[in-house]
Image (cartoon, rainbow, N blue to C red; front, side, top):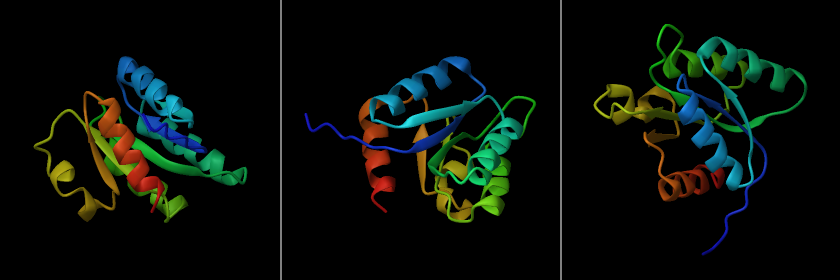
Length: 131
C-alpha cells in the first residue's frame, strides 16, 4: 500500500455528527489537520478566521444540504468571496442534485458521494491536492 501523506488544513462541513467524525478520521489519517463545522455560518466564520490569521485551507468539503442552515453551495460562494482560489469538494447523499452532477459549473473542484469511501476519498484528495 502506498501511503499518501498530505499536510495542511482542510475544512469539513456536515450537519451529521457521525459523518463529520468519519470525515475527520479519514482526512486525518491522510495527514491533514481537520477543522469541522455543523453548518454554513460557522464554516464561513472558521474559514474567514483562518485567512485573516494568515493561514489557508488546502480545500473544503461541504455538505450540499444542511437542515435549517446554509448548505454547501451558498457556503462555498461566500468562501470564494474571501479566497477566490479555494478548492471545494461538494458532498451529498443525493447524487441526483444538479450541483452534484454539474459540480464544475458551480465552481467546485470535485464531488464526494456519501457515505464516504476510504479509497474514493484518497483518490479524490490526491487528485485535487496535486492541481
